[in-house]
Length: 379
Image (tube, rainbow, N blue to C red; front, top):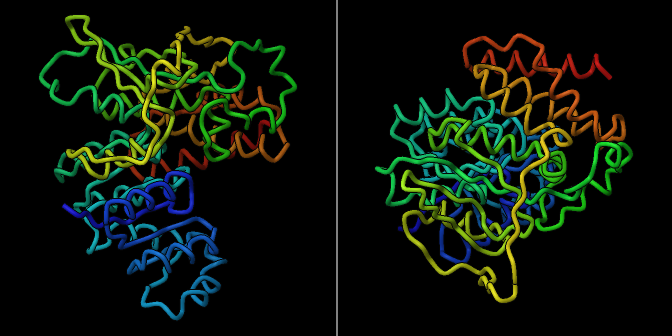
């Protein structure tokens, strides 16, 4: 089947690679959405000729509209435009690769419009997992993971859904500061933190990898995607990023998914599932890799992982509070306003707020505001 896609976050790393996959396999692109990169969004619009494009930053709406005035494309903006792109009648699947909490409402809009979801937006499940997965079940909408780790788990479970799972082994590269002490992390710079050893990603996710909050968010995602209790999800540091994750079943047999550190495979698998197709990625050569190493995470030095476990243990709106505090703290670090270690401190302290409310869109937005106020008043 030649799917028709709407791609949210089309100018980011995941979005641009998804467009390469679409081009390679002849998939149609019906909608495109980006935050503010109007130049690249214009280029993509001319290349893929979607029916609708959204520029989230409303200050760039008129400029983008003028840029593509010669094309038969409708231009929209803001969160309303993003939700419109997510529920486009002509699209079969929505790939959500936007960054941050703005991804929640378009995911819900896509589910309500009965679109298949290829999900690369962590915050959708971290902040609204209970709401999203419940609604997806009611609407009979598949939520297919795009993150390499969750795609790996999804692939390992294929054909074994009837089997009891002992553990999910969620692998982590360890980021640029693996083996460092808290004292050594006290004065790390933005440049240091953005120097990831294996992956090329956006700034937010790269900083999250450096603090290991990224793995905490992924643990919460795995909880919602695969219905496995948090205590059965084990993070394993795997420096080579060749094993993307693994599943241990009740007979203690472990099935793992391996491959080079390249996002094209998980992106393509979500789009083409249940089919597998040729993928323009480098084949894995184990002789070249030589060895695979594994370590236990240091959750005292990289306490974001411990905070994430505590947030999902409490449930309700506590993951939302933590996620929102982290989003703002990471931006403050990138802006040079707080130190690297303060990110983890703020994420831990925000759990002092009351997060016991029901998981609704309004309550999620209220928790976001409360977390932002807490962080800004704490620095």
